[in-house]
Image (cartoon, rainbow, N blue to C red; front, side, top):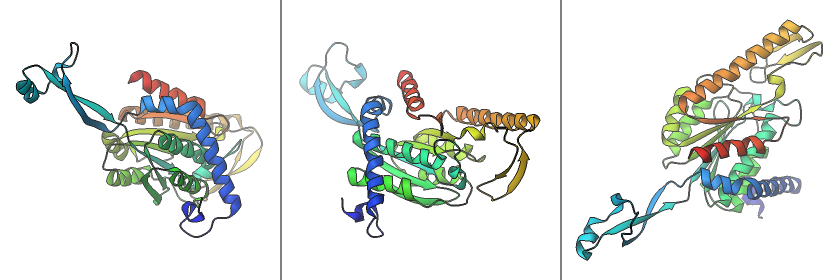
Amino acid sequence: MPAATASSRGPVPEEVLRKIREVEVRARVLADEMLVGTYRSVFKGSGLEFEEVREYEPGDEIRSIDWNVTARMGVPYIKKYREERSLNVYVAVDISASSWFGTVRQSKRELAADVGALLAVAALRNYDRASLLLFSDRIDDFIPPRVGRDHALHVIRQLLYAEGRRAPTDVAGAAHFLGNVAKKRGVVFFVSDLLDTSFEAPLRTLAQKHDVITLVLIDPRELELPSVGIVALEDAETGETVEVNTSDKRLRAAYAEAAQERRLERRRVLARMGVDSVELFTDRPYIPPLMALFRTRSRRM
C-alpha cells in the first residue's frame, strides 16, 4: 500500500503500517466470522430500484400492478423492484478527553478504535460505503463515505492515531454536523461514553432521517470505586482534581448510586427517541453484546 494512502501528510512509519494492518486483519476476521450475515439482515438498503415488468402471478401484491402495461397487453402485469443494497454507514467516534480513561484491559479510546474498525470493515465487506467522524467538543476529522481496502486502512489509521484533546464531549454538535452532510438515508453508529446532557433534541432529529445506534463505552471504575484508601481523581475534560477516601463505604455507595442513576437516565433518554443502544465495557469482549443487539434488531424487523 502506498504510504500516501494511509496518510495525506507524507510517509508513514513501518511500525504504524504494521499496527494498521494488524487491526484491519482482526476486524476482517471478526466481520467475516461473526457479523456479516447478521449485519446484512439488519441493515436494509436505502431504497428500491425498478428491475422489470412481468406477468401477474397468484399471490402477487395487487398494488404492484402496472396498469398501463396491463391495458396494452390485455392481461395483468406487475412492476418488480429490487432493494438498492448500498448504504452509507457513518461511524462517529468520541475522542474527547474522557475517552482516555481505562483501568482494566484497555482505555475507552482503544475500545472505540477496535469497534469502529470492525464496523467500517463490516460495512465495506457488504459493499456499503463507510465514513468516519471523529469528534470532541468540535468536529476533529471527517472522512466521507467511500469503498475499498485503501479507504478502510485510512479509516483505521485515523481511529488509531488521531490526536485526542482535553475537551468535553459534544454529541449534539456531531449530530448537527451529520444531519447537514448526510443527505441520503444511512446508518449512524455513535461510539461514545455519552458523557453529555444536551444531545436529545439533535439526536432525535438525526434519527428521524437515519438509522441511529449508540454504542456506549463504559469502564467498570465509572460504576463503582474499589476500596484502596485515599486517591486523587481527575476530571480528564476539565483537569479538576479532587482527593477522596475510597475506604468510606458511604462514599462508595453514593458514587455507585449516582453512576447507576446516570446510566438509567441515559437509557430513558435513548428509549424516548427510539434509538437502539448497547453498552460496551473495557474489561470484557465487545462482540457478544454487539451480536445480541443485531439479533434483537433482526427479530424485530
